Image (cartoon, rainbow, N blue to C red; front, side, top):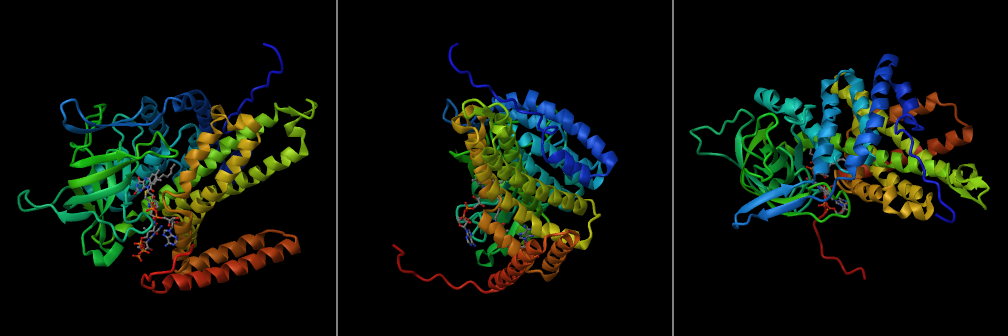
Length: 520
Ligand code: MFK
Ligand code: FAD
């Protein structure tokens, strides 16, 4: 071939060449735990390059076959081979298992999320069903009957794909996802089976309604909200249910899962999405669906909150994980691309390095915020957190998810431009990663709704006080230039007073809807 031949970049090992993770983990983990986890991350990094990356290329949009050749409604959901293999690979690697085996006690959360950080960018949205499985395992641990803990919980956390379950979360309905107070799905106690509606997993109910977004439609169970009291009570008459997607719930090990949904769950259609295309997000109608009540009636939102909070940490890991790879690609390219008549590599060009440094700073900040939050989550779940630490986790979780979603995509765009035209090509996958990451600004709570959740948490004085005391203690431990110190103090004072105002506004009653003049 004639003419100039551009040099392809070589992406490094996702763990060993990462500018942040090895140092961060060394700082936060005891040395023996660090050595074990680092060995696993080193091995897994090779696995990401050699196995996950090729399997990722086999993932594509799922297909819905609604009727068979004979006109019968079958609602067969066909995911791609790549999707199914990727899910099995993650399960074998201990996502979700690591979090509940707790081999490294409270540090197990750090271990598992570090693995997700390395793999996320090479696995599209596979962590979506696994994150909801993680949240559901926690709900099962907190609320499950002994039978649920015996039969279902071990499958949610299993490393064996032949028996492992995944779980979905059905909250969003057509009247609202941010605000679920108009939820239309009704839940009525099931009658007709003898005199009792008892089921080993919880009192049996029948659900009727329409779930507007179901992403883990290929899962085995779902946690759903349904109304057990009057609509006038809004979200306070919603209860939490476990819904089997297939019967029998407990399949034989290795038996193929039915591709058609049973339990009177019908797939209306698959969503036609901007990103996360391999994920089978569907609209579902529930027409007499069997479900089991978890916990007390009327407590649905509060009881599903552990799922929200855990999936929000996964969401943040997705944002940071996709940014991790985009930055790794941009850095790798800076080592091979020459400019200025071929005399200088990008990595030796101060103007370009300044651009990469800006992205690197965002990545560093987000990675530290992520693992600071993850460390708290591990402590709370293992029962070794102080009350202050638990309160800090409550404030940090929505802030982390929203901040990561907001900052990561813009930084990923910078990485794309750092490759010039080559960055815009699909082969780099930067475009795909941006497409997949944009949803982090929406699902599991939009940025505005998460800001309101920070305000909700701050409305409890002890939570706000714990947070402010922690910020002050961090500042006191730093030696700062007096000017920086003053500027930070002013910003914090403003934040504190803004939070006070927001908390007051949040507590105020909502005025009734009034017609307003057109704006334009
Ligand atoms: C790559 C992977 C990553 C992740 C992928 C996941 C895919 C997911 C797809 C989804 O999007 S699933 C649907 C997710 N939906 C949301 O995130 C809903 C967003 N909206 C909210 O979060 C609203 O704030 C909420 C629906 C919770 C508002 O409901 P309410 O009923 O108006 O709230 P209210 O009355 O303030 O709170 C009820 C109780 O729950 C209160 O406790 P008390 O009864 O003791 O007062 C609250 O303190 C508590 N609560 C609410 N949010 C909480 C919480 N507790 C702990 N943590 C929270 N986050
Ligand atoms: P709305 O709530 O109508 O929000 C519209 C706008 O109003 C947003 O900008 C929002 O920030 C703003 N807004 C809302 N309330 C306020 C307020 N009080 N003050 C100021 N602004 C406000 N849901 C599930 O339950 N299960 C799933 O598996 C699932 N998968 C999903 C997969 C994808 C790809 C997507 C995109 C969504 C999925 N969702 C799922 C739904 C998702 O959680 C909701 O879309 C999200 O919570 C927002 O709800 P909504 O779409 O009703 O938007």
